[in-house]
Image (cartoon, rainbow, N blue to C red; front, side):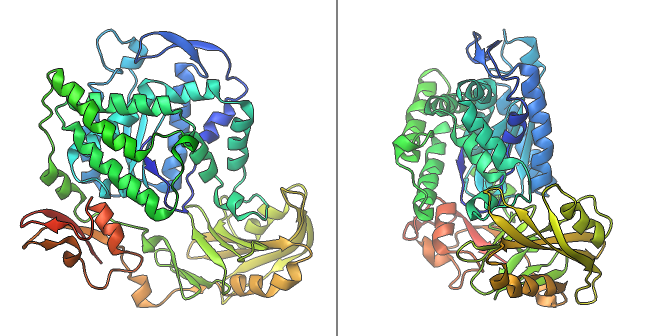
Length: 502
């Protein structure tokens, strides 16, 4: 699995579907397309197909696909060419595998990630694409993910994983508004499951996918050794984000080890008669020219203790010192010591503010103190105060506010322990009462940072080509990594560079 989890944005998990099958995961002898042998697996191939289809729908709903048909067509065409060399399409492969359609998607996420679901669903993020420098590197990444599907690594994982870990995945996913006072638990609803799912592939499975990814790319003619530079970027990203794990603690081989292995694996296929001449830097750079980089402020951002959403045209204040995490399905704010939580989201299925509140307070275990209409800044609303027991047994008190705005129904859920509620009531009122229309034209028209691919007009150090003042949220180091360069590396005339523009 190629991935670098560098964002607090929630990753809804394929693990959600895996949990549905826990009761049926048992000893199943099924064919492995890579070896042709039968082995013990957690799921039948039909179950894997179902897992992929159902999980794909959730992933699309969670992230959305990157809105550029040229990029989508490019990735799809390249991926299908690589697929033809995989064990899913070779002579002698069982018909059920030959007939399995593959789906390749580009997700609108700044996380540097690529992953595959059982049954033929492969995803790359725009974050990953901005960190690649040529088509050969992308070919190896795609080959790696196809290999996970072909080798049925997810089904192998389910068979060998202990039930307790699977239940942990399920517990991390179920319930989008699960009461609890741990920031890690709330922020990683979905994200925890994805990390457990992806990180729990064995090192042997990851090495097998590396080997097969190189094989598939090399057979299409790509210079697979180019992928070494991408692994160097992954290592630098890990170091920069302080998320380095000792090699023995991670199921993934160390990026430095994988960097070296790309060269040796590539040489094996050269010796077997595959010259690997294709790199296609120019073609690849033209595809990612103009691609969004970093988080897209159009999807919401915080500035000076105010959260703004330009697309939905609203804003609301966040108490000073609170941490805010802008997730695809919710905006979560925490008091610095995690004693108070505010969750803002669409009230799915509700047709008005009162229904948005009643959806929540009508759940089992909720005791309502009061419930009444409560408009906010001329926006029709409804509010309830009540108590409940948290997931960890804590007695909690909450304020839930429904709002009708611009054709959407929203809901705030603000809560703390019952003992602390009095201390945070003013903060909860600040948030809920501060929801308002956004009419600042500068914020309404804010645009994301994008990549501009340029041919260096002169020689010089890479840093000299970057703007003196980087766009908001961007750093020079980040763009050096994105270019697979160091800031002091010497750039020659005509060398293609990825630079920020906003």
